Image (tube, rainbow, N blue to C red):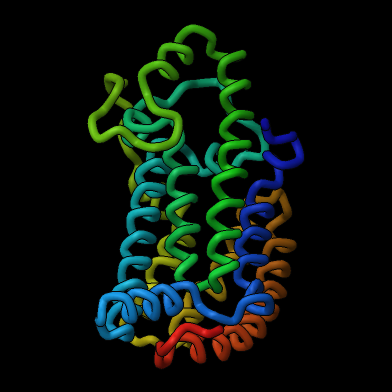
Length: 269
């Protein structure tokens, strides 16, 4: 169940592939997941399905804001070169901030991110994104736990016994070590996640698919080049090429999404 060296080194690409395939699943299922749920709830409860659909998109935006907050909080206690390192960093054990509530706040936020972005996907895409993200995060967690156990020994074992693996505890489970949070660094490391949150919020307000792509069409390319080890010039070229490809895909997807969310009615057969 542990992630391989290749999976861990290229985890950003795998995350991108999960989202990429899940969004493209509209070619298999043309019904938007939130619109489909709104149709079902509206028919079952006698409530306006348009109101339910908008509420679901607002809920998705709130979920993404929570995910962005958690990732920013966690990254503020780590340096970006640790968060996005190509190998497991085992030199020290961080047990401050969100790491007092869950051992893996970044991966927990990734699961929330998949659920929130799932509102913009088809029904099939939503389930693929949620399940694939959860499975891959657990594979990464098992890999990191093995390396940390070998490096840290008894201190990490005590930390494992006290703090939940993924689902956070409401109360801190371990004492703070006094490490200060570096919020500016945290926001810089997670700007892409905030971009997704703002984009879905813009869509929830306007129900215009074009608004959804104003920000995130630039985010995935920046995330992927941030995580690789390329030179600055290579990263700029990759970012520009990624932008061009994503804008074309965005326009194609926008037409599909607008059709499925403009006026929710009876669910498609």
